[in-house]
Length: 421
Image: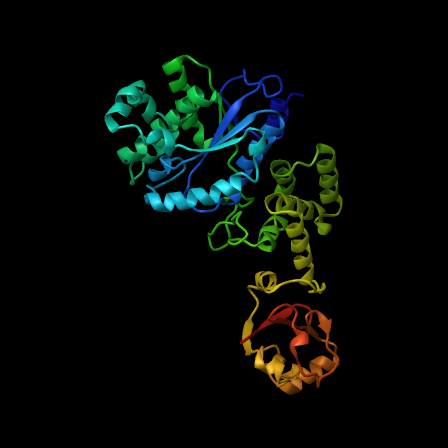
């Protein structure tokens, strides 16, 4: 089975512009564009990054095009209203952030490139661009693009600025074709109109053959946009924005109906292993082995193995596992939705705080009498260790990390105590 046939069979690609595309016997230089709308990429970008990795493993040469110029306008594809325009300074800041992330996925040392389209747009004047490039486009063809038709039919309408976006992206492809021998563009299925605008421009301008491949736009099992938190924010690839633990939790919570598909999309596991996990999912769904494997593999890919291992340990904490070696940042991430209190560090230094005090201050018990009874019943845990001494006085050695203690009553009722100076 050819690579194309395999990708189509497992729905790893959505559309091909030509049956001539042969990923096994021909060598392509391909590009993917990235809008600098933020200083980090997010889970929604992950599949195209993995597709770039797959193609590079097959021997093709990737170019990541950062939209320093096009980002000042914004791609209207898939958008119901016009984007808020970004300043050049903010775009430059965002470019620096996402450039570092992209280089973690494609091997620059083996020929991959990261370029900024402002480098070839800046020398153009408006008149020269209209004369040299604009004349190659027919308005009727531009209006026939799906992204344009949807917006023109909406109450929002479309500005000339966004209408011209497809011309700019097409010119990216032409420039790369003429200067980097780029003959293939890869993008989400919503990019089909922009991609074919580029292949048409190349054919008209220099007679070269150029091709396009789109990948599926991935949605969650409930049909919502993939990679969004419940509050509508993104799950970011930057560990400062989304901790490895939170990132791991996103993947481990995938539904049974979607996890096998995501194993194919987002990991490099072979079909034999995926088939085994599919059997496990059918026979023993309660073990969630497929979800655990998905979460581990993707976290390891985006962050590293140490981060993935730590995320597993952090997950085990919620089921009574050891807290040894976990720092404040990780514990705050794990217990971010747990009620918390602040206590003076001096209460530990001076040994002024007893376990009964902590239980009542953290609202895990209404009174010290109730706290005593709970300890006698074996229902109180400090840092996931059972407390048996109701007279225990706390000190700095009882901290789980730099400044935190985790208190639990019963099986699931947690509180976090943060000891501050």
